[in-house]
Image (tube, rainbow, N blue to C red; front, side, top):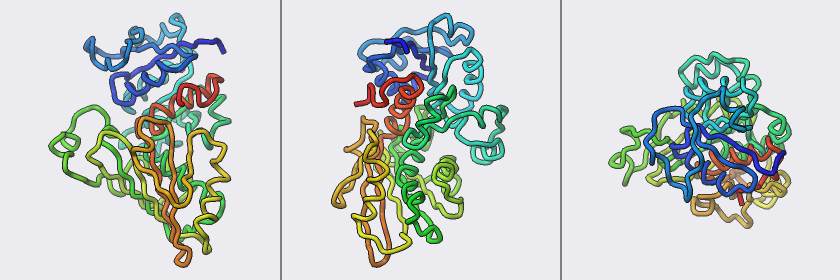
Amino acid sequence: MADTVRVGIVGFTGYSGMELVKFLQRHPHVEPVLLEHRSQLPDEGSCWETDPERIPWLPEGLCDSGIQLVFFATPHEVSLELVPAALDTGVKVIDLSGAFRLRTVDKYSRWYQMEHDRPDLLEEAVYGLPEYFRAVTKVARLVSNPGCYPTAASLAIRPLITAGVLAREAGVICDAKSGVSGAGKKPSRKTHFCSVTDNFSAYAILEHRHVPEVLLTTDLEEHELSFTAQLLPVYRGILETIYVRTEEEMTREELANVYHKVYDKEPFVRVYPDGSLPSLDSVNHTNYCDLGIRVDSKTRRAVIVAAIDNLGKGAAGQAVQNMNLVLGFPEACGLL
């Protein structure tokens, strides 16, 4: 690849989009270009030390502009409309929405309550969780960036499945809490200051659209997973407390070794020692997923605590990690 690659960002005024531009501006090998796909105020989204170049979103002009990859930090219905046109020009795409995360139109219709008219792209899209799908991400032209909740849940649960230590008949309970920025920038009654401050609430119980992503990456069946999302009165960060039972009695050290074998060489997953537990402060403004483990050997109960920044490893940071893989840069470039 060239020393510097021009990359476009559609949806740069949203929370994830603004965070993405911040990551890209400190990346030594890319030049971010803001692609305006709708009428925007001149200062809308300007939260950077210097404003990148802005040009109109015109798919037919992408090649002439020298852009080789486009990020879509847009709602899923907008991505579903715009991504095919971008792919037709020959650029690579990393989509931060849920438009291409599921594998079939039937699943998409059930969980997103809308029809999907590009089943071919659902089949083609690579689910961009680098720790597990690194090899296929490197050769993909369409990468679907994982949701924030599934990123933390999948990194916490999948090692237990692959090691065969999870008592699946006991089920998996995922108690997931997120900061308000995870709901996006568009104002709503649920995310209004007066609704969130001094409050704590659960939502989308048994029907959260991130559930099928966790099932996809962990191989759990729907009846084996109980997932509840909850809204914290904070700006950013996700903390998930995951309750499981092991097949046999295991010490904390034995269970921790299951994770160490998988993640010790991973640049962005940190397994805590000696039963220490992560918090939002340990991951916010980073691309890390931090994991803490507690075990009661006699009852075979285990608790995994996973923490990420929903705007970092849960969105923009992971998108840059995927970009590095697609463009052939060192995976951690611009993220440490």
